[in-house]
Amino acid sequence: MAGWQTTRVPLGLGGAFLAGSVPFSNLAAHLVAGVDLRGVATGTVSGTNLYRVGGFGPLAVAGALDLAKGALGPVLVGRDRPLPAALAAGLVVSGHNWSPWLRGAGGRGISPATGALLAVAWPGAAVLLGGLAVGRLVGCTAPGALAAQLALVPVLAVTRGRSGALAGAAVLLPMLAKRLLGNAPPPAGVPRGQVLRARLLHDRDVR
View 1 (spheres, rainbow, N blue to C red):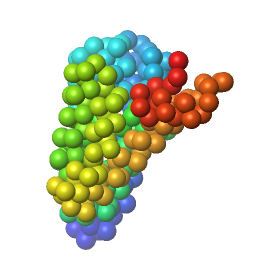
View 2 (tube, rainbow, N blue to C red):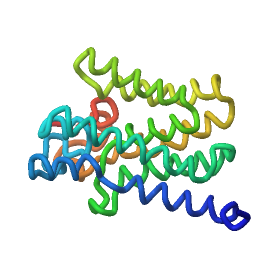
View 3 (spheres, rainbow, N blue to C red):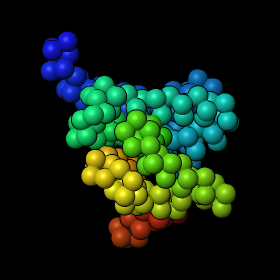
View 4 (spheres, rainbow, N blue to C red):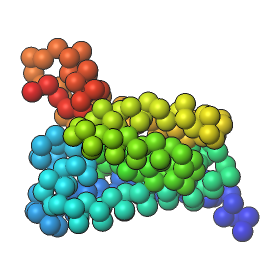
């Protein structure tokens, strides 16, 4: 038992990144449609692109698996350890966003972030899901997701205190970084500031 207590944090942190790196949406797209999501629409390995090629069924399965992998790391390290749990949450999102199995490509991290926050700070998961729901209602998920992401740390600071704010910041940073960096270099001939603004606000490159 003492040995497990000693190793659970490093194992949990490593397991968080490894679990996060498994690209369930891309695997589902290969199985049901024989396509690589990196070549579909925005090029993100995301539920939105999976829905485009496979419909709701594969999306639901992959989404559930992404939620589960998000919760794995924080649960392994122990939810009673705020700093390691927050690090695990951030690592699982980072593994998802920059998967070594996809040569650094990946999704935007919202599903694994939601799973991680369900494990350690559930109001944050509600904020992310609410942002996606509002975005769906208005027909554009990108602004809704961004608003929810920016609300994470303040909401969790109020509802869960310092540990909640820490968990929110840990998942927020890789989500915003991936949103700005994307999966491909900026389009040639377009000012970098314009590209970054389009990516941040609309989650796509300038067309």
